[in-house]
Amino acid sequence: MESDEVTPGGVPAALTERVDAHRLCMRGTYAPPIRCVALEADIGRHSRCTIHPNRPSVCREVDASWEFGRPSPQCDKARLAYGLPVLTPADWVDVAEAGHTTPEPLAPK
Ligand code: SF4
Image (cartoon, rainbow, N blue to C red; front, side, top):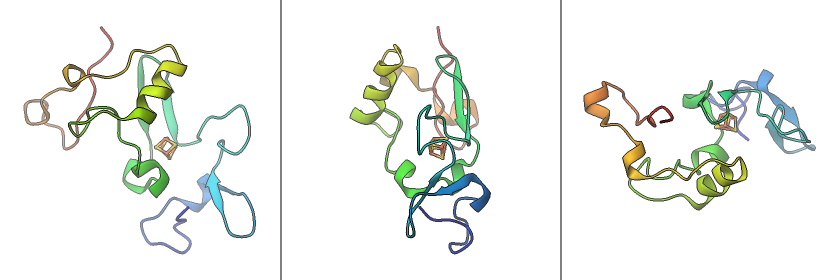
């Protein structure tokens, strides 16, 4: 993980914990109950990463399904584990119409 102690724009070091001599992880993700310290969420209603622009590369590699026009098996698996339906293209608002800089899923129906 890329801590801002060594990588400008990296993950805030205060939000990480050491896994071993060479690796860090997000606080709250090393042992159960798993809950990333940067996650602000009421699962099934809303969620957001509070450090989205500075999130670690391992998080950047997992898109939400259809966020960029393609499904994400990891996203689908995580949602199904929490009893949530997988996202579909219809779950995304028109970015320009909503005035957002990034896609955002619609609120639950
Ligand atoms: S995307 Fe953000 S909230 Fe989710 S695990 Fe990564 S750092 Fe934590």
